[in-house]
Length: 286
Ligand code: PGA
Image 1 (cartoon, rainbow, N blue to C red):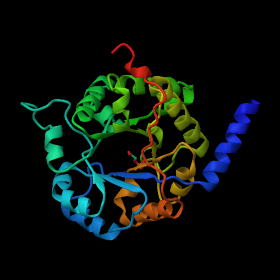
Image 2 (image 1 turned 135 degrees about the vertical axis):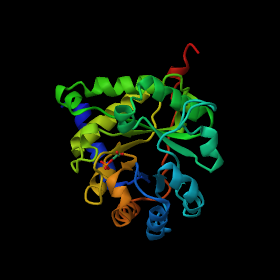
Image 3 (image 1 turned 45 degrees about the vertical axis):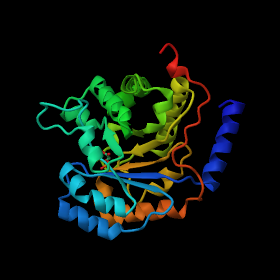
Image 4 (image 1 turned 30 degrees about the vertical axis):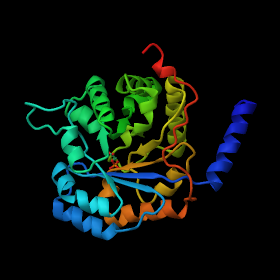
């Protein structure tokens, strides 16, 4: 490790040990939770978060029915998926206009389950990102590598490709409408999260790539077996700005514990969505 890198690491360790930012704590309910179960869940976590940002991505039925309950509890909400098309004969799809109508400000896209089971390509995801951004949504864009990519060492290439393709056409002034969720596929639903070193290194790489593409960076959440046992340690890492949580986000007790841990370690007054522009590389040639 060179002198500069060593010094940088010391500074980062000291900063992350003493200085905690507000986190974005997002739950992806996937195809779980009826409306009734969602209501019961909300009753249990009612009014807990003050400094951190809580987001929930329920299935569409609960999304529409619980929109007011989410809003009343100060919880951001949105769909797990939406159409890249504006409207028309697209059976089974939901448009941005429809989700805006029920007050959604956020939306997930690019989750590995959509990529894997519903064959969503980076090109389709890119169209969704552009649609969502142009209609004023805050997009949580999920990216992540397979175990083979991780083990072969090609994960950085894979992540960079996802970033470049999924964000193609997003202008630098629109970048603050994007939040990245780094979710290594091999850590999703396995009960075994990536190690702190892996998370730190990969988040650093993602932020560095964004700086190179845009001259600024945006929040990067970690997802993949986050629970009430590992959230405090992961949330403390320098380049981690929050979590995207699957199974622990279905359990009100565990989810509340994660929120409480984040609240306890949070100093007030730190913006959760910083995007400081230093140049406008991405806009060149447009
Ligand atoms: P998990 O899921 O927390 O159950 O691993 C995370 C996700 O798929 O977003």
